[in-house]
Length: 103
Image (cartoon, rainbow, N blue to C red; front, side, top):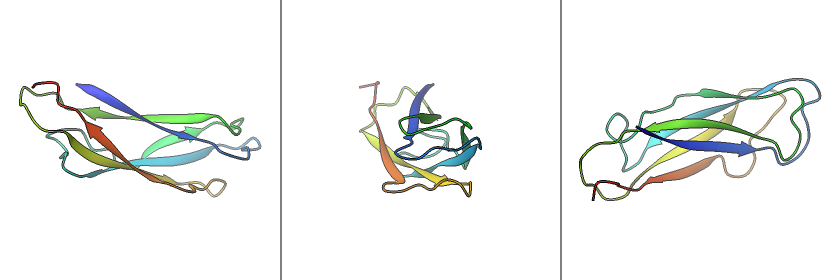
């Protein structure tokens, strides 16, 4: 089983001694949960109390390896703020493409 790492980067500001939480979730596309990857639902990504612009926080999505030759497939990941002291600006959704290693 492989994994894909999803990261968010702080683009401005700082947390001033408090922590903040982002929630990572997945959405099926042509890649299907339990067949191609393991879904993540509001996995907490914690930003520490001394996080500043340029720092990042990452989460992972497990990929399911099988012996089936398949075309490229994709799913989406989303980030949402679960804290009052942070917001997700700009692109909060990204597409992840899985390349088949069985062909």
